[in-house]
Length: 237
Ligand SMILES: *Cc1c(COP(=O)(O)O)cnc(C)c1O
Image (cartoon, rainbow, N blue to C red; front, side, top):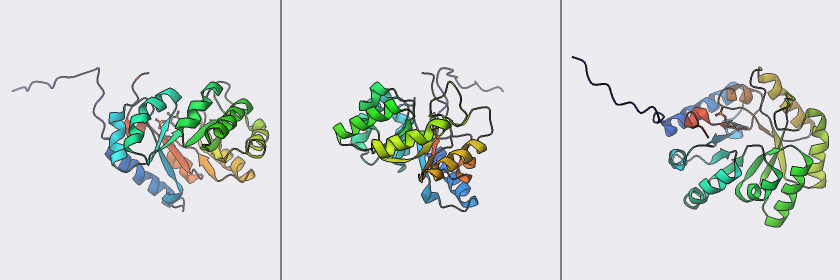
């Protein structure tokens, strides 16, 4: 005899076990680090929760996770006002393209900014850090694939931008960030970013997403930014 099919709710995504996904990704990070002869302690897993509601973030916080990624200033500010009150240890990484007129809010909300890619933005961030007496860690984003539609400094402008940020503006620059072109092997881009960082004596490498973080770890990533593998597909904006 046929059983009644369970009611389907096509408008609602299937339940996601965030704690289990997070544990699995942490285990993979550990494995990838070990395989590369590195310690997982050198790698910060940024759980990218952009587009997701607090109800999905809470299981990660409850599991003891600390680093989270957002890519819109207003969303981050609104969502984390309440979350931060209950979880003061959480650290927010701003990973999106950043408009200069959002520098004030970005400095106010973020513990790290992975999106510095032009002099005007660097200037605005420096002004705000001074004004707010807050100094989030700064990553300079590099457009390693020189894609016209993508944020990030072009490789040929990087030396000048690093010097401006670090020497002229005295921003707390800790490293570089990249997003390789979607259709290409990411490995050469990660290797290039590592080379640039070594040239400038920068320690941190923000590279690797759900699809390629193992490769990024093999090539020296210190910060991997992982969304989908932890929180599932993002709802449409
Ligand atoms: C959304 C986003 C991520 C996470 O991507 P997933 O493929 O979902 O892991 C990482 N980095 C940046 C800059 C992003 O915007």
